[in-house]
Length: 256
Image (cartoon, rainbow, N blue to C red; front, side, top):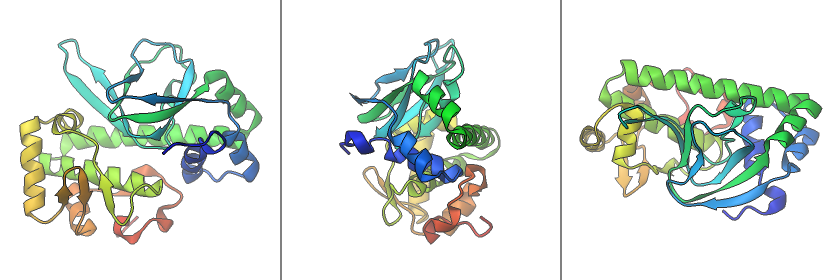
């Protein structure tokens, strides 16, 4: 997606509106933010632990991930970001980043000066509220990931990650007809779920044999959302979207 300058932040406005309704004036203020477009290769760092966050990057194309590295070099992936998400709201009022943000695949970001975001929040309180709610939702997703790694079995862990990823893409209108691209290698899936790459491969093959997923290279489809979400113990409540009722039926849980 080569986002034109005047519409480059459209996905961000849509993302914020998922959690808090914005007026046309507030939406326009988001679209008018000064920004610089950057194209990044896979594995490029957007932010490193210890950096001072001076810009807020908005993901326009591709996918990125948050991670931390332990003293022995082990990596834990903490979150996956999809297009439209701001990558630095968590660092907006902090002086030092406490984790890394890196591209999963080649992509495009819009970099907004930190001062411009701070001014936007001061002048448009409803946008500030939307940013706060979005950050709280990110914390909710972190909590769900902790539960996923700490309490669910390997089969449910992988299934839950797939359900969440598909649901978030659908909310951003980025998954057509229930088919989406999974941009992660098996090693990256392992780092996100606390498993080994070999174990991840076995789980994916088992889910496919059971008819819970269909794979064509990196493209994935769910033949039965109900069955997969039951295996995953997935309920989208923790995503706190205002637009759950507008999402395709395939991504609706029975008690959403």
